[in-house]
Image 1 (cartoon, rainbow, N blue to C red):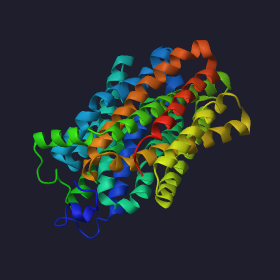
Image 2 (image 1 turned 180 degrees about the vertical axis):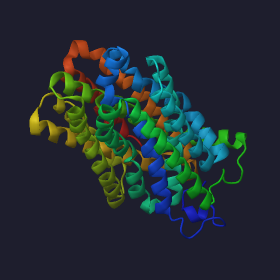
Image 3 (image 1 turned 45 degrees about the vertical axis):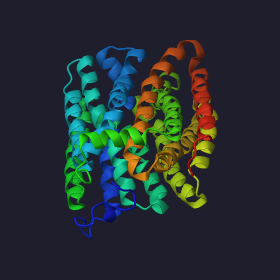
Length: 404
């Protein structure tokens, strides 16, 4: 695939109505559904801990198993995308989300629930590589930052929706209803993805790539210094952010006296901030002509803001969560938009995104486990401060990445 524009990727097959914005919309929809499946667990964590009789350390595996699957799949997902192209790869992702959601909804035991989460993780891992590669294909470099800023809202938008919808749905119909919802949305996303990309002429890999060519592209895309520095930046950020997203609802119910629905609603302020920060980062990055400055400044700001929610209450707590989310949301947007500049050639953006997803999921594996391990000795604020220190390291590393 190229990254110069959708019409250049498949000029003979693109119909006039299949605009770059339509492709972005469908890619965003599939991505949001995958994140809703991923973040079905955190706002329901107290309910699930009670239902299955597990403690906070065991419950952290509901996010970790999801991310472990993503770590294992990240680089193979780049190969799959390079070999088969975006339509079948995205379709497989949607099917995995649907199947994993059904297994989770029907889970009679904690082990089966974990298995369903792992299958969902297959879907999110494929989406995280495929969707941004399609978005990069659809937009020119001059407009890619804003487009990536919109797509980068997939995590805050999906998690925000689940934080708002999940607890009321679970209280009204039981916790399995949340995963039945993501199964239904996954079917809708599958239909939309297949129909749109088929109409756009993105049925398979450009030129019918062989497995050997796909492997060569993956190796070339991940051969440079800058892409691995960018992977490290995102891994460190994801470690801190994954822990915060997983345990803030638990903190609010256990330490601030919120019920499950109230804790989810307050936690969702961080997700709302992330959505704002994501779009703002894309626009600012395009305007100033620099992605690196955006994510470096945002990382430095995120470090102290990660601690404040555990020290404040009332309106100050709400404001701190929103501010934390706004700066945290700017980071993925700027990092994703930097990937085409960090690989040897923009056509290798899919391979670069595979590396970024490897870093993200490695962080999501480490973050909840690290947070749960440090909490007994450091308390909530101290553990958040330790996470914030990782973000400062990420900012220092990020400044050395040679991207615009």
